[in-house]
Image (cartoon, rainbow over all chains, first blue to last red; front, top):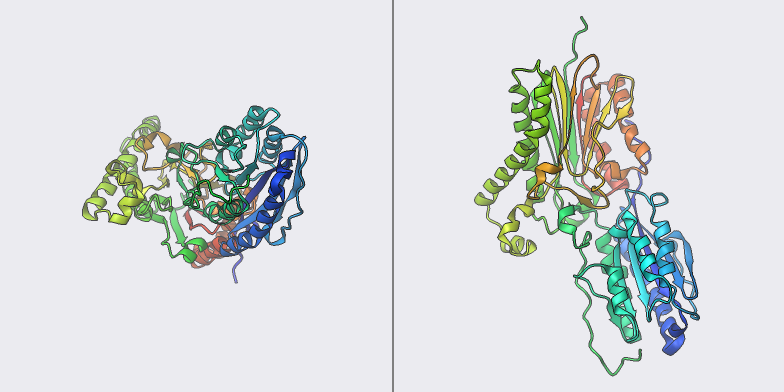
Length: 233
Length: 273
């Protein structure tokens, strides 16, 4: 038996970060409970996607923002071991601070150049009350911030679509509008399965073709639902 | 006078673990031509996603056209005493010629094998984008009695290993090669994205030159682990011969993709041990 040349082999890390609005308005009409339920229900789906691609190590974290922003799950946690502790709501909407602390963690190091593009999912029902532009700038200053797959979910009609579009920074993608618990669950499932699966593919592409930011092919969006009698947000 | 050691080539390419699961072909290619005094080796990596439906063919065309063209270039340097002229031609003429010959090869292939409806749909039914179907990188190295030449467009790695086992990178880093993005032969100004290094052989020449597609370095936990490939292969060749490396290379690369990146993995070796 011959010794394989080189050092230790390792699958490529894929960092997946939930960035969740926990402002006071999320306590209204059960939004925060619905978000907790949707993320909990998504975990088995994410584990299935990870099992299908053993060459990507899916590592999950979460940030919560209200009067400030903190890591809700600070350690990159293998999806196989990931558990969700419920978020609660109260306070204002420090979205800019949330993006800043994510940006800090996307620096190289601690991030690795050989990682797969991270997936950032921003979920909000309102408008930032702090320096959103500064937070977004700090995120986009990081190579992994620019190359991340950035998805935004707007909860209810009061969510600031323009802010979420700036976060996505891609004219081919729009914020996903969730006006009831069912649509929120559908969108959370989409990002945690279809988007995660696409991001974990090792296919490369010409940098010239990704000027719009679509460095990872984004799968077809789930069916958009227009206003319905079920809308509660 | 110390006798020059002759150059030998070896290499292998294995389909990535992810491509085995999805049923996609190996998108990498490898090819070498020449003899003991003049050898040219090339590896290429087709982009692989649905937007590049013929990138495995593009990679094959890349290694075939690059080795042929660079070999003719090396053999054509009748005034090899004037290395500054050779260097200038290598830096200014070869990238344009390589990009053009790849494009010619692709146009010839697509003329003989028109794109299917599915392939056209993947390209957005844009005729101007036909070349994109074949998008690939190219990494090549040429060795002669007087000089060593490295040319690289896109991701992948070029390493040299000295007789003392020191591993180096002869090409400057391209910061655009980040995440899953790469420069590509399929862009209109591809020639300008080549990185070129020309090294006259004076007293020393590399013991080994290694060319790899990005699936190989991405299979190691860190760069130190990847660079160790250079010293380990040098030691293995000295202890057991290049034949031993040839016999085992495919298994080593297969182990790497399965426990590592999942991407196609290709390694080419030029050896003067």
